[in-house]
Structure formats: structure tokens, C-alpha cells
Length: 410
Image: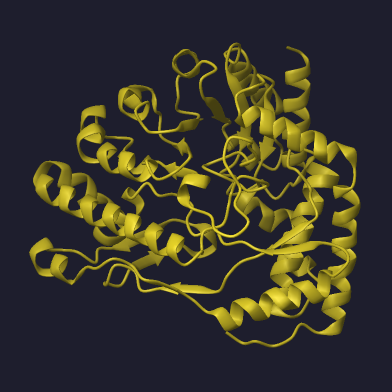
């Protein structure tokens, strides 16, 4: 990594953006939203919260040509600040704007011992995995647990740069999100390929268990290393957790010196097994999900998969709190299963937002369908997986406005 100091003009730009963020963070509405998330995550309110995560749509809202900084790191920080400001000034969802600026660690890892080859995938498009494991007997002996390393020099350099730039404006903290999901099947597919993975349940069932054992034990070993080296960071504040929602909670402890997995939100999912039976999930995937979930104080389950048919397994996950209700879920059944014992993380279809002219009637129909089934639950309305906004950022703004209108009409 090139440890080149950020030039003065970039520093001036970043400080100006940070001052605007700090001004928004000082508004009383931010503390109110924070308290709403705490009560929501602690299952104490039943009012739906609204969150939009533009994801790839950010490239249309804030194209790279709009950034002013020239230094590579400065441009990434500029992007983060401008996204925060866009939430505050335009999207106006329940994202909390605070005065903390997070700087990630500089890390690397050696994977499971074989190269992961993804063909395609440019600009967020589809990709094909070239299997690293064609014949288990030949390759499995070569696999090993991943080993992660932290470049302490580079990490400290970036941290100090941020402290200098945002001094007196924002509080700078190191924070590293080591994973998005610990669901394991994504990593299995990286090694074996999707088609092989699905066929293995029938053709190579004993190898499925051996692979899942390896991935699970490797993950648990990794968590041990992170804990022992004080490299876990609490995600119980203004941190995106699971496949939607923030981590604010009073139910998990916060340790100033050393965080353990038991102090954190965990997350498992298995979208890739949506096409298999609940029994197959229960036999080959759930036992390993359960081992992972046992390490965490609170857990999230699911993303795009429908959970209802496998609920008899999912409901056994330790400390389960947030469950994804994807567009493929049966809203009535999911509400009956979750009641007010879990957060119902409703994902609305992003399809209407992908057109240059959003069909607002369809958006309202989708929202009405969800809101019709929220009575007696702890709901959140999440818009994500927006691979495009039809090159019309107004779609994201209008979706939040329409969601607010439909909630007010209840």
C-alpha cells in the first residue's frame, strides 16, 4: 500500500464535508432515531422503521466524476461522507447520522489454500466461478484454515491521517467489518462452484459434510484468533448488521478494551440453498449455522431466501433476533411465525426502482401488502439490492417518501 499523505486541498474538501455531517449529527432527530433503533432491536416497539441502502445505485447517485479529491484514500472517504450527507439531506430514512468516522484496518488473508477464480462480474454484473475443487480426493488435502494478517503500519498511518483531517469535527475510530455473512455456503461455492455444490447433496453427501466441517471449524478458529488478538469490533451501535438494519441495542455489553463474539450480532444465511428441501438444509447446513450462531450474543438470519419452510430449523438458532422476510416470503405466514418475538426485516422488491420512471402504484401495492401483515410484529422496511436506479436517483428518494406516506395511513 502506498502510504502517501493526503494533499492539503483534499484535506480541505474532506473537512468541509465533515463539518456538514457534524451539523446534521447535532440535530435532536438523530438521537431520537438512535433511541428508536434501540427500542426496535430490543423488541420494545412495533412501529416500522424505514431504511434504504442504494448499494450499486450509489454509482448513479454519486458518480465518480462528481468527486473532487485526487488521493485514492481521500476519494473513498469523500464517497463515505457524501453518502452520509445524501441520507441526511435527500433520502431522509431512519439512518442515524452521528459524529463518528470509521477507519478500517488494512488486512489480507491466504484463503483456504487454493485460488478463487471468478470470471466476469465487471461493474457489478454476473460472474462464473471456475471450481478450485474438481476432484475432492485430489484437492481436499491441500485446504487449510484461512490466516488473516493486519498491516499495522498502514492501518495506523490511515488512522492518524483521519485524526489529523477530522480533528475537532468528527471522532475517528478504527472499525473493521471482517465479514458480511458467516453462512458458509457462499464460501463453499467459491471453492466448488454453484452447480457442483447443488449436485453434491445427491452425488457427494459425505463430502458436503466434510466441506461444511472445514468451513465451520475454519470460521470458529478465525473468531478465536480475532478475539485473542483484540481484533473484533463491537457492532452494537451505528453499524449495519445482517442483511438489513442497524445494530443499536442495550442487550449486548460494550467493552472498551476487548470485544468478543458474544458481545456482537452474528449473521448466517444460505440463499444458495433456496432450491433445496428444508430437510436438506436441516441435515447439511443448519448444524453448522447453529455452531456459528452459538458464538454470538444476538443473531440475524437470512437474506433473499424464504425462511418459512425451514423455520423449524432456523427457530433453533441460538439468540435469534432478526429474520429476513424477502420478497419471496409469504407475508401472512412469516408474520404468524415471527409475531413480536423477532424483528421482521421486510425486504421490498427493488424492481420498480430499476426503471427510469418508477411505477409508484406498484411501489404502493408492495408496501400495502407488507403493512397489511405487520400487526403484532416488530417490523422494519428495507430497500436494498438496488443494482440500478434506472439512472434516476429520485426513485430512491420517492420510495422513502411513499413508505412514510403508507405508514402514516395505517
